[in-house]
Image (cartoon, rainbow over all chains, first blue to last red; front, top):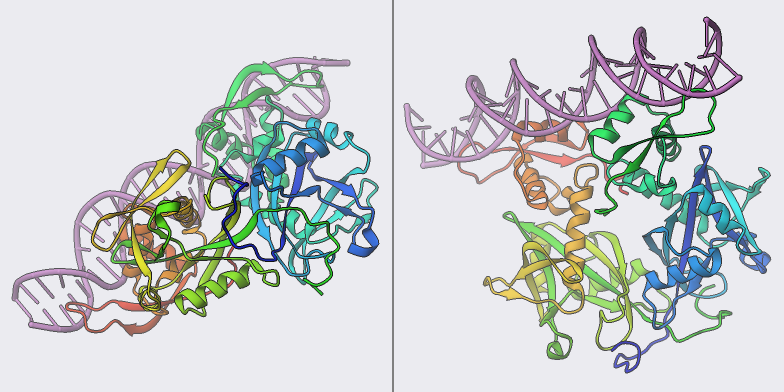
Length: 241
Length: 241
DNA sequence: CCAATAGTGTCTTTGAGACACTATACG
DNA sequence: CGTATAGTGTCTCAAAGACACTATTGG
């Protein structure tokens, strides 16, 4: 029933797009998937988040999944809508309103995705700063050189990290950045990276266990020197927000 | 620089609209501004949230302000973007993606707005339920008769209330539903209504004062029988999220 | 002085951080 | 058996709920 007979008067309207911040955390560093731009000189910024125009017969979630699939080759990932950005000059090529999403994947999945296509690259979040249009993430490339993103994509990344910080301790977002089985030390490192400060070990462990977020598997990690840690898994995939 | 030369290839795209849930709380009851629909039989639901198509030269915030102004005659209100809804069949007349906002105003302002235009009405949130497409607010009209909203507007209201519950205790959203000066009992009633359960008086007072949310004015409410309560005002308008 | 609400003091419980301790696997 | 990390027990402190109390105003 959608899409064919359109009884609404049509006006000239902004174009509608989706932008995706695909994140992972590796060794205490936040990484974002970006793609090289061909017309970087015109837009400003040599890289941008992957994205796409929204087609007439797609929901926004379908658009995001198409981007995830076509750009990064991913079928399953934790995806959440972030916010819709509509500044008049956010795209110098024309009027585009963009619904931003973020996706979280474990490092292994991220690495696979970043290799999937030519032009894909990894940006590293150096720190969260502020510029004239609000919060902005300062990014580096893999060699440590500053990287400028096109459009308002630095704002999108900064907003994503704010959202993650807020959701971290009452939802399971942290688990999305880890494999199915993980040690509590790994989980704690994820939390510390997102929050930007250290946590105390006993408190963190008790909280995770007492709240019913994780369950011990009885198995232990392998290939480590010294005492191996027990592997845990998350309990409820349900009830986000 | 926007809006004129458009270098993007244009495709057929969904229409882009904004919907606004204007809320207040009166005597422990959540009220929402709705407008009567002329083609309710076709769309289903006799009332809908006020909204508008987004014009090519407007940010979404400007669209919301235009709606606030033209429909409710309001210039200043606390407004926050909620989420963007894009289900294919959310509008049976055609493909429309809608960015939902909510606005909070004190009861006095709300009453003025509801009288501003013919066709405006007040819906009362009876309770939060769930239907096939997720959470949904059950609404009544002023006479207690069930009221069905068009489109996914019942979902928008339910999502707004979830958001409010989440933000209530670490932001100042509660204050937006009260006049500049208010008693702590009034503030507590706002919180209780949003949360859906009662709070203990000493804890609530200490929390509000200790966190630096409110400041006593030295003045007291008037025209009350029995002991009048002291009037407070909020401290920081800054730092939302 | 009575009714009814405003406002506070104290106790308890809970949860988180600090700190120091014990446990275990590898070499 | 030493080393480095895994994992825990205890203390303290802060915040929130329960409960009971005092304070104040209009009639």
